[in-house]
Image (tube, rainbow, N blue to C red):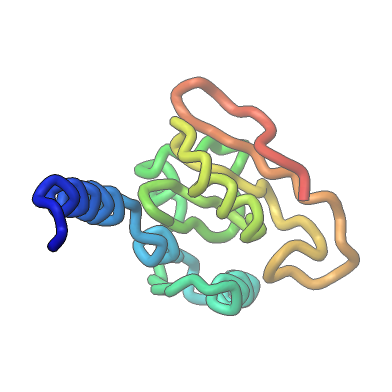
Length: 149
């Protein structure tokens, strides 16, 4: 016969474990991206495909006035690129590599988002020889380098 205390201790441990698992963030939710782009942009499609190949569920929305969208999402003018994405509450501007996005979603800093300004050669979705892709973080605290990829 199993002592009542042992059964009670097991039930408490099982309940604590279930609570811990229930409150873990869902990796699926953090892997969804909504990409806003100009209808004629080909490299934007390339970046969306790159995200899909790296496990993201991507929804692409064509937008005629990207400047208004970037302004609403508080992307600084100096960081503009050709497309803008929303990923798990963050803004991701331009040809940002998955490594930078994963770092952002893991660390969860208090930024508005990250950006790869311009259209760096060889970056995800862009042809040409690979250049350093300087990804910058932006938000109420200003702009700073987030990483070089």
